[in-house]
Length: 426
Image 1 (cartoon, rainbow, N blue to C red):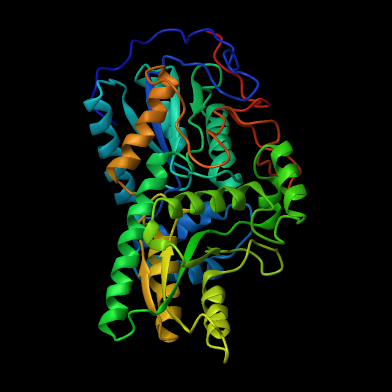
Image 2: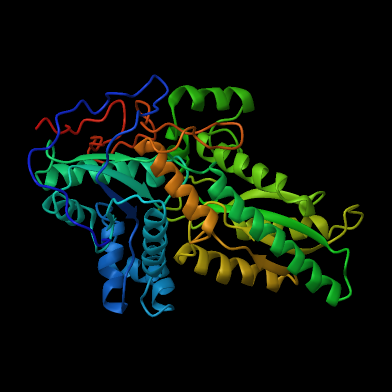
């Protein structure tokens, strides 16, 4: 939490949580008095790994023996997830930018799966005298795990702590197409292409064929089908003639990624003529449950086989540049699944390999997030966005990214037209 004088205590303001929301889900400015950085969380040492994974997989009945198989990634890194240090750096950068703009609102940090947990953080926010909270999540796209689950985290925390009706909690829009998120990836792709071309030139293959893989976290096909506003999801299926899981662009989640990839490429003329594709990584769960494909390792192997076929006009693949456009920072899925596994796959096939940076604390990204905060405070006119979708809605549509739990229930949320969690009345 940033140092500041606590807000005065007293009754919470009376309000209608949907007051000022237009038909598109755009929220009129509010006088927020606290900010929350909401993230996934991760272990801080070897003793934390299995308890952390139990939190991640809660309700699935996965035994510790199975969890230990997944724990290998964390064990190899000393039991420490990189995401914690990255979130601390992100908080510091955001606090500095807020201060530079004269925004005197304290910033707190809460996680879904590890300390500091969101419920305890909300209790601290309320105890410090704050009553109107705006949340910034470390996920940019629309899906259950990257948007709605954070809204559920807030809704369930308000109820479990008894703060429902005493603390208002909103969330900023998904920022996948904000220039501040897109531009760091373009900068990284430009540098990555230059580096890999120099490497190939040094190896005597200056015209070597390249391919850009835009990588994101895979999600279950059922989650892809549920992602985003229902009318838009139906429109994308009609446009593509495909069902979610049958091809990229047939669902809101993959369509957002394709759009961002195209925006990145428009900013990088050095990528002209280079083939590219959207691929997935980090799938988990039961093998019989379908997830979005292709997996990045399979895609690399298949492309090598295709381009090394006799008579191929484009020449054999010589190198790949991986752009992790689905991720905000270099956490475990990036460090292990890309920097370790995908790199190993490429190098075993004789390919040059470059993985470009995530936004992290890039100045454009930090500035972009604070721009969105200023939008919600009424300090910044307009709603910056690039690509075909326009600025995403502040308040989610009914049944957006909905997920029915194993017991047949749907968890309570905030920041949606159909949110069930009550708002402060006093």
